[in-house]
Length: 80
Image 1 (cartoon, rainbow, N blue to C red):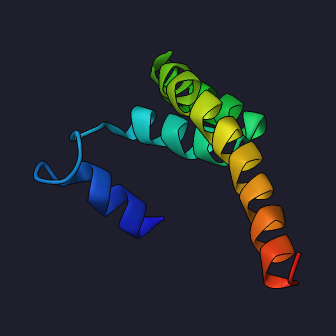
Image 2: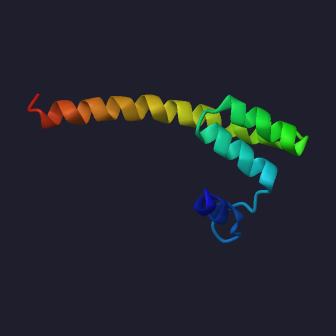
Image 3: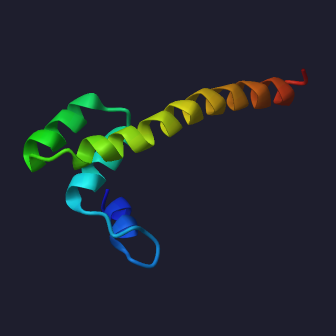
């Protein structure tokens, strides 16, 4: 997690996000609603939910596509 925080806190590479946004990004990237609830309770703001809603749809699409890609690559590697 420290690499993630350093990457997003660095003004050269990241957006300079605050703690609440980083919690939402992490919860959304892991598709973890309990982590989102904890982040909202801890920060008492809606910033984690906004960041979660930004990342969650992309992660769900990537999960579907990566699963299909793995099956396709394994099929090709088996000689199919």
